[in-house]
Image (cartoon, rainbow, N blue to C red; front, side, top):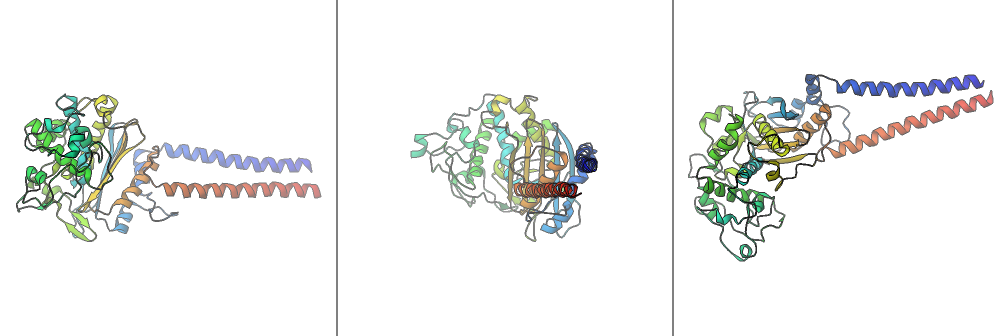
Length: 424
């Protein structure tokens, strides 16, 4: 009877071992999928943000329909190269024009991150100093002196570092094409036809201030600073230093958006309302005025990563970037939405991979999280801290509970066999 009992135990342990081996082989096989299969897995593997546990994954078009989003465009970076780009949906709710990878979107607040990268080139060339009073280089307009500036001057570092310039907070307004558009100076001074207050220092520069739109105001001052130093318009500065050298043909800071780009621009959306984004004019271009595609933005991010790794010297060196940005953490990300558009990127400068997502709806937060989550899983990238943590936690709980349940069954089977053998 002991021989029979041992044989049964060997069978049970062997069966468990076989399951483990098959699971390992399955994981290894999935890692060897072709690129197209990985992309299909990502496109059809979206979890639902508003569900704790999702038994059925959904595709990108299904989730677009679920959220009422007309169009999404994606670009994926791997090993410092563009790996994949694809567009889904149409340019507007009422339209039938399909999006392409050359369809342009408003980058909203992500514009500032491109502007910051451009500004670092002036530091790289020794034209500007990060810790120097910006009033020394401002010509057209200067920051008015007051009790705060006498205590600490506004520097380029405080303008570029999130919410530390000490300026007043307000949202940058757009103006309708064909109406009177304020100049940058009129925005800075709050003069008609500008409909926003004058920009002033209202707290100590250099200290972080909790505010929603303060960083955008900082980039209005930055734009004037760069134009005064370079003696040319900000769109031309961006084109000469970054866009033209990278060969980006679908990216511009020009405002109003030139009509030559109109056929390839996507409309924006708020709820079920379409917005002709190209008809909106933002005189504050450096902060929120960029029009681009995920593909072009991906090439800019690749250049950022290469600069940080010392693989390119087009814009700035690693030493210059490290004065302001820490890209040694797993993922650097930025997300912004407004007036009908959403834009998001995340990248790992050490590994050289990342993702860009642009959506023609300002309620795209859940969808971009789901897309990011799905692509990270399919490409087996290291998880960032911005993904669906709740999904990971609850999935872990489910798997742990299942493993515990199977262990109880196995122990129960062993005890049952032991009791049976004793009776016999």
